[in-house]
Image (cartoon, rainbow, N blue to C red; front, side):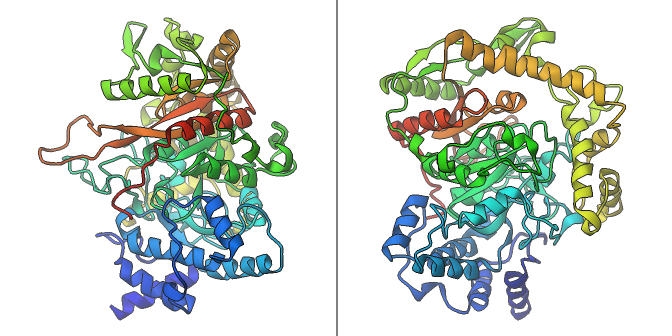
Length: 588
C-alpha cells in the first residue's frame, strides 16, 4: 500500500495519474484522499464544510463574499468529492496539482478588494482537448500522455483571467470521437488513456454479451464529459461540440449545455476535428451557471488567432446574466418541428424519426408548460428540409462520412467535411505545437497507434483517422466546398433560417439531444435544459434481472446565428417554470 500511496502523492504533485490505466479500475478513493492531504499540507476538515453538492456559482460566490467560505476551502471540498467518488465514475483525466495554491492567491486578491468577477475562485474543468500549459492536454491518446502544449487555449486564458481555477481536465472520447467509427465504433466517453467514464445516474457497466467491455450501461452522451459536473466534482465544465458533443452529454447527465454560434468562443488552442463545425461551450447544472461560464469564455475583442471570432458581438461586459429573465417565455414564438423530431416521416420509401411513448408524453407536457408560461406555440412548424420527400433534398438522408465504409470511392452519398476538415485542421494544429508535438501529422499518429497496438492504443481501430488521412487538402478542396454548400442549404437556408422566417419564430423546440445535429451543421446556437427521465431500454435488451435506471431527458431550444442572449432567456424561463434537474442519488 505504501508504494501505491507514494505513486498517488507523486500524481497529486505532477498531474500524472499512474492509476488511470490499469485493468480493474482506479485505485481506492481513500488512497487518493490521503495523497491529497499530504500534497496539500493540511486536512480537508480544517474548516466547517460548505456543501458543494448542487451549489450554484452565485451561491459559492456569495459564501466567499460573506466570509463563510474561502476559495481554498471550496477547492478542498471539490477535491474531497473527487477522492471519494472518482473511482466509481472515472470523470477526470488529470487533476491540477496547483489548484490550492491558485485558490490561495485568489483569496489574497479578494482580501485586497480585487474580485475579478463571478468566477473568482470557482473550480471548473475543461475537456482534455483544450490546451492548458499547467496541466497535461492529451486528447485521451496514449501518444499524448503527459503532454504539455507550448501555448494556452484562448478560452483557458479568458477563464483564468476571470478568476476561474481549472481544477481538472475532464474525460472525453479520444480526440473528440473522430478516431474510430464503423465497423468498430468507439463507444462514447472511451479513450485509450483512461478508459470509460460512467454515468452517475447509473454508474454500472453494460452487462450485455458483446458489449461487456467496460462501457457504461447508461450512456454518458457525446465525446465531452458532463460526469463530474453532474456529480459536483466541480462547478461546471467546458465541452467541445462538432456534431453534438456538448448537447448530447449534457442531456445524458441532466445538465444545461450551450453550443454557441461557431466562433463566438475562440477555437485557438482546441484540438480540432473540423473548424467548420468545432465549438467549445459550457456545461453546467443551471442556466445561470452556464450563462456565467459563456461570458467568461468569450473574448472581450476578436481573437487575432481566430479571425472568425468577430462574427458575433458580445453583450456589454460579456455578461449574459441580464438575460436571465423568468418571464422570458411571455409572448415568445416557439415552433414545434413535428416531422422527424416528434413524429416519423417517410423519405424515399423509408420511415425515419419519431419518439417513443414515454418521450412523446414528456414533450407534450413540456409544450403545455411553454403555453402556460405565455409562449405562442406554433405547432407544427415544419422544417422544409425535414419534410422534403426527395432523399437528395432531405437533411436526414444527407449523412456525414464518418465510417470506414465511407472511404474515397464510397463516399458519394455523404458529406466529406468532417473527414476532410480532420486532415486539414488536425495537421495544422499539430504544426502549431512545434517541436514539442509527440507526432507531426495525422499520418504519424496513425503509425504511432499501429506501433503501440499491444499497449492498447487503438482498441477500436482507427477507421475515422484512416478515411481522413487519405484526403488531399488541395485536390479535395472543391469536393469539400460542394458538400459544405449542401450542408448549408439543408441546415440553414432550407433548415433553421427557413422555419424561423416562415413562422416568425424566436426558436424551435426539440426533444432530448436531437436538435444538436441540425444546429451543429448550421453552425448555430442550441441550448439543452434538464426536464425528466425516460426508460433506458436498449436493443438488444439488458439481461433479465438487470434493473436499468432511467435515462435523463431534456428539451432543446435552437435559434438563429448569434441568438444566444434570446436562447438563454427562453431556457432560463423554462428552467424556472419547471426546476426538473435531479442530482444523482448515488453521489450525495
